[in-house]
Image: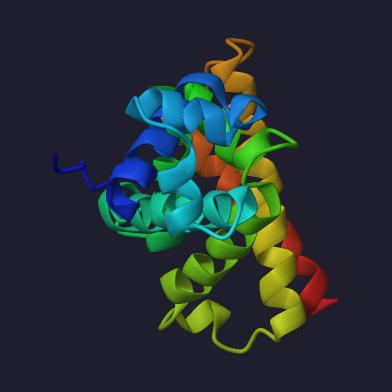
Length: 184
């Protein structure tokens, strides 16, 4: 009798479905295996441990977001567009957004690190950012990240409903505020 082979992709797909539905608080080998209808053995044959699976999942999801979601053009300003796309993602996938970017059990730091690398790529070639030190790039990223994550979380909770132009202005204000410190 032939046994079905479960690939890394099968496991990642099931892990994604678990996180998308329940967040990382229920991210266990047992729950991923249950989603696949198998024992936990295939998971541990393919991944060193659950942290390895979690890291691989976070990286896979971020690469997908980078390619399919975060690159959509709205205004012609790639930094503003990135912020809009991040907020749009939070509205279309609130549970997954919270699991990946807000939840203490989630991708948190890993997603933040991915977003910084993507941020640096996004602003390459922009004259106004070309002379910024690594310290200012990190400050600019952190300021924008805090602003848009706040907006996204408050929108997901139904607390605020800003118009697109208001979101753009919030991001622009965050950028100006951080860059103004550099000029002092």
